[in-house]
Amino acid sequence: MRTLVLVHGRAQEFKDAVELKAQWVDALHAGLRAAGIDDKVPDERIRFAYYGQTLHDLVSGDPANAAAVIVRGDGPQEASEAAFVHAVLQEVAEEAGVTDDEVREELDDPAIERGPLNWTWVRGLATVLDRHVPGASMTTVALTTKDVHRYLTNAAVRSVIDDGVRQAMPDDGEAVVVSHSLGTVVAYNLLRRESQAAGWTVPLLVTLGSPLGVTAIRNALRALRPIATPDGVGTWFNAYDPQDIVSLYALDAAHFPVDPAIDNHGGVDNPTSNQHGISGYLGDPTVARRIHEALTA
Image (tube, one colour):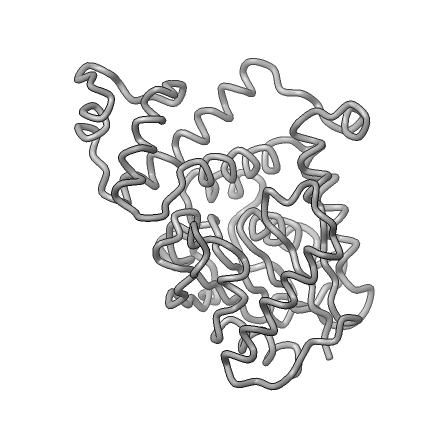
């Protein structure tokens, strides 16, 4: 059996890596049962790339753990981050049908201008969006986007996180890589940069609840290197709940153009509270079946 490499998303700090891995595996096995597959993935074939505490320590500036490896942002960097987050939030709102007039009405300020540093506008945007999309959380989108920005623009943060995920890749043999949320950005970027040199063979790359198709994120990745399927990846399978506002788009020709085209599954009905949780994705029978087929091929 091939090795299963799991790459988590954000907000995983202060958690036990063993317990977190078990939650992922339990959700996958539930998905297999829902797909009518009476099988389990052996624990010794599963590697869980845990970087949640590292990410938290890096971006929070914890002096005991991160002072030596992170360059703290100054004013211009903070402005760049704010502009990046605002651009993503505005795109999410526009896709949800939120108009500028609705935001101005919510704020009771017909003269207010939207802009990358106008957080009053962003708060109004969040309130209106929450009415448009039940269960939507602009806070989730904003925090995910902040972490993506820090990963993509701060070489020190990126280096430490990539090192942790790199160690989860097998030295020999093939790996099925399953990633979620921020983890899809990390997995894609690391494979895109290093897969050829490292000789990694990934018959299946799975991205779940991925924000890769969002314009600002795609452009930031393109600034690092051209958008393309990473070397060594056989099939790329992307699954999303259409109501998950973190995974704003299918990874199709319009939003993440690669050759061969990514296989998109937009039929996930994620039952978690924000329709973005990993248990709701791994519990989907189509997702679980695709992972199992790749592991046992």
